[in-house]
Length: 476
Length: 117
Image (cartoon, rainbow over all chains, first blue to last red; front, side, top):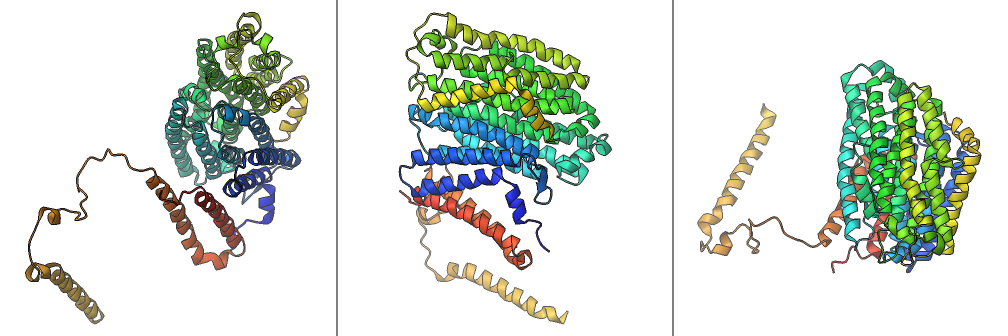
């Protein structure tokens, strides 16, 4: 007997191997080198850049490794690119922020890379067990990161809430996996998709899928499992919230799209209907609750619930347009949300931990660059062309209409209009209200650069969406 | 049946020895009970008290260390039984696993997780 593991399998892992190796390297550096802060930072940046390059290089060759349990290239590489890009921006913005909050521990970078490893494994999973492994790697790192500013009560509250609710949701997910395994006799996701039609009538299979859905809906932060989102995003260190709301959500959606693929949704009609209702509720509840928020972070948290609804629409569509839309949307969402949280992390100071919308009054005069970038991210989040956010919404709604879910697309469009109110209010406050936001922080050169990059990328993606869509088309 | 006779004798000897040794000091030893001697733990720890008590976070560190090495043993034993059949992938896989574990150990050691300060 010989295990079906070869060196080719390890090499095929590409970006995952790079990021995981980087995590181990950082642990060694942390143990050996004293005062390693700048070194750790640059190694993290380097590892993520190499991982992004590795993902780009392997994106054309899709396959499987480790006996068909792990996807390589194609889909996995595309998401590896999204995660490394998001995490790279977060890393660049982190040192200044951590110094402000007096928690410049270098373990931050270890946990960050560990979380990214987990995300990549999730997006590369072709087996429920591998997916679970990735999910836990990511989640455990996030539980710790959420409480990273350990002197802050809100940060501790955030970590505790996220941990308890996350562990609870994981329980549902595992139970669902057990039931699906019980009906199929296999944990393979490929097998789940190919034999879903044969088992669609079995109540146990549907219950299993339903429990899986609970876990997924929690992880992507959609209604009705969205209660944790505002508290966790508000309490966690701002850049961690930025990564949780983008990388964490993208990873969950990547696996969501794999498990609840077209075959599964088309045969399990009740599950699809439930998902459609949840998507509509996420868009409605998220957008309406976001209107009444005074804290910018809470506003962004509720808006992330609403975005989970939009992206869910693309999953429900279960066709090529919808899947491409989800992949494009997640890239755009990662760029614009990391950007928005990045601006916040710069504006926060040791005394002003939680920036309120009113604090931004008059920002366009004192910090014209930051105000301009924030306005751009808000336009993109609203979905105003020519920014990438518009095309994300366009593709998922086109997919939904193509699949006969016109009502869902209509809800989505109406709710996008509602969302314009609170996104654009921020712009109005920054540009047209008098105020003296002198208490807010200033950007470092590297911080500003890492905000300009996603802004340029959003504009480029909005003007030439076909470059990415051609890429995502190859993945199916 | 005959081959069971030695076993029966062994059981008999075991039971007799156990009963004798458990009770012999009741007859031979001095018997001067005090309150401390009669309590469950003679070291002075109270056997029944409130469970809502704060205890040092160091115990958690030790517990975490224990779990890590406990899991290692759980993996190593079955692997050791079949590693000849698993070679070379099994050996490389286990080396990778142990390297990851050792890196964690180095981290804990250097960060003072093993010092009971």
